[in-house]
Length: 385
View (cartoon, rainbow, N blue to C red):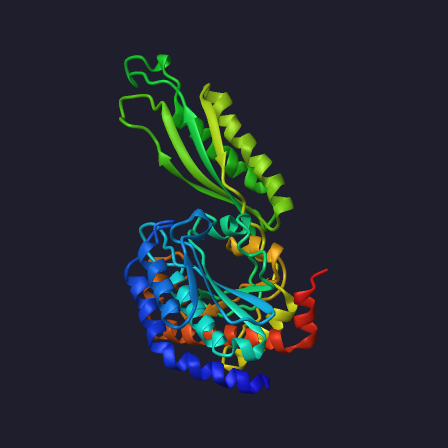
C-alpha cells in the first residue's frame, strides 16, 4: 500500500514539476523583503488553489502569511514554505527553492491524502530573515492541530540534522548631545564613542564565550556630519547560542558591553529585543524516513564529523519545540559559495537547484506518506506524551 501511494505521489509531482520551477524562478527574479512578500505569497497561494487546496490568505494578522489545506486524514502534516529575501543580495539563502519544494510536496502528498490517512497543509511563513513569521503563527495557534512539520533548506550540501542554534535580535541606540566637533567638543556627549566602546568590549568578551556562541552586528547609524559630535547612533546585533538556556547567559554578557559604552560616555542606552528563535530539535523518526527517501532519490549525506558545529538559526526551531519537526538541508553543489553570499543566490536558480526542488518536494511527500503508514510513528505523533 505504501509503495502504491508513493508511486501516485511521484506521478502527481511530475505532472506539476514545470509549474514548480516557474514558481521558483519567479520568486528568485522578484526578491521581496520580510513581511513584504506580496508577489511570492500570492503566487504560492494561487498555485495551491489551482490544484484543489483550500487557501486562507493573510492569516495570523500577517498579509503575506497563508495556510492551504487538502485531505481529511487523521494525521495532520504541515509543510513550511519561506519566500522572503535578504537585503541587497536577494535570494542568497534560496527561499525560492524552499517555497517551490513545499508547494510541490503539498500537491504530491495531497494526491494520496485521503487514501494515505493525511491532512496536508502548506504554511506560507513570512519573514524568516529576522521577522519570525513562524513564531507569530505559533502564537496565533496556527500549528495547534498539526502533528508533524517539515521543510527543506538549500545549502552547499545535504545534511539530515543540521545544527540550528538559538538567536535573539537586538536593536541598540545611544543618545548623546551634539556639539561642534572642533570648536567645543567638550560640550558634546559622543554617542558614536559609546558604540565603539561597546564593540571593543564585545570583541574582548568573545574569549569568554562557548564555541557555539556567536555575536555579530552592524552599525545602522553612526552620525550625521563629521564636524558635529554624534548625538544619535544605532546598531543591530544578533546574539546566538546552542540553546535558549545558553542564550540567556550570552545575552546578559553582551548587555553589559552595551552598558559599558553608555557608562564611559554618558550616553543614554536603549536596547529593544526581538523574540528569540529557538534551537532546532529534529524528530528522530521523521528524520529517518526523510533520510531513506532522499537517499532513494540519489541524495548523499556527507559525514560532517563530531564536536561543536555552530551554525545558522531559524524560526523553525520554535516550531520544533511545539510540533515534531525536521529541517534538513538540500545540497545545490554551490561550493565555494555558501549561504548569504551573492554567488549563492546565482546557484539558487541553476539546474542543480531545480533538481533540489524536485528531490526536496518528493522526499517530503514520501516522508509524509511513510509516517502516516507506519503504525508506531503515526500513533506516537497522534498521541504525544
